[in-house]
Length: 566
Image 1 (tube, rainbow, N blue to C red):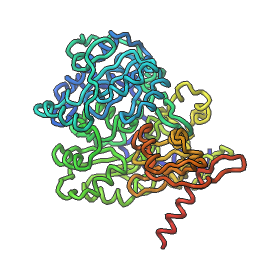
Image 2: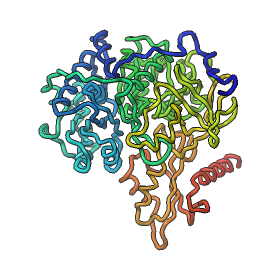
Image 3: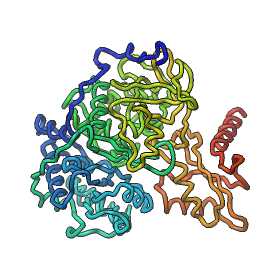
Image 4: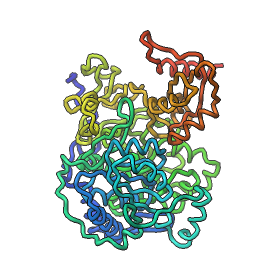
């Protein structure tokens, strides 16, 4: 231990935030039972004008859980959830846990290729998806372990007359698509909730050992891996969040749920925290700046966890001044660095507090944050949360560094994952004696505040989404005209980073930016598709032929600096 470096951050903790927490030793879904028992008639969800109480939410969750069990779901089976923020996404998540399953959060934007990979890797037996996504799921079903598909539609939870009008809107947006009927291996959620008994068979869950979630991430390298998170990992991080935001009032505050629940930050800091604290969730299925502004003005949410791109999108909206945002009390920004000017402008517009936090999927996800109502340092990721330790290690020797020295950030705490699903070797690379090597380069100052200066890994963070260059490169390499490809993140004032592809074409072959863009859009979710393509005669390489992606990034930075100074 470096002299004097032991948990310097505790000196800044206000009296309301404990250094250590006595965590509830119970499965995550027990909090829904407790909240529904305590506040049965309190509004739990608001979705485009329709509301559900905690009693209704629990009742529908139990019905789906019992139905899944009747279909043969056993403890430890994996259930994929491929839904945007909606009542069904909350019901499906807690129902799967209640039935003893492990949830596999699946991005609704995934293409067939990405969906096929995740379902195969996780071995999911069942999936809960939107009706418009059913054709995509059906196409990959035979190559996976899927046995049952539960299908639901946005209109199922819309109030009248929106539920009547929505099918016309849906047809305009998605065209005609195959609409499944209820029966056999396909189950319509609306029918399930009418037919199911709601009598859930009790499952013996050990919170510290049994997994609740496989959350897919690229980790530090390569293709997405399933991060294994137990019930205790998720309960601990949610209760840490509760203590950090100590001015939250149980059963009184209102949370704006625009962060997707299929993203681990939205799942913990929005969904799980809201269920635990009985705060009403205002659900938005996607980010639309105008819709978010209208919602804040009308519904008066007090808590608004988000990402920098969300706050930037609101601040730059031409009609910003038409809306009253003064209900906002507290926001913790995650997923990407928070520009100081964005923080200051947002606080001025709302009168609330916006601070930067830090985390990663492998830690459920939050490990650090600035204090909302106490000492904070702009540009810092803040200090470690209760029961969370953090150190800076030398990237070569792995020895702990002195205060102020730059190295790799490592974290330790009850929120840290058990490892990567079926990948023991890659688990060993990032988990060392309980310490999680984050792959992020930073330092700690003499006050115990931490700063991130660079990323050891090549992961791109664009608009809050994690994008793994190798995955995009693999798609580009499949194009018949491509000889070599490298993908990197370049600075972008709005998205944080933008995906850029550097491409060398085969001799005698031709392909335009338009051709490659169309090809990528067929095989990748929209947010992963390169926004910029640069054709080159060759790519920079090492003596053994490895493409130097970092050199491409450095070249890009030099170009931007030259442009700025000219």
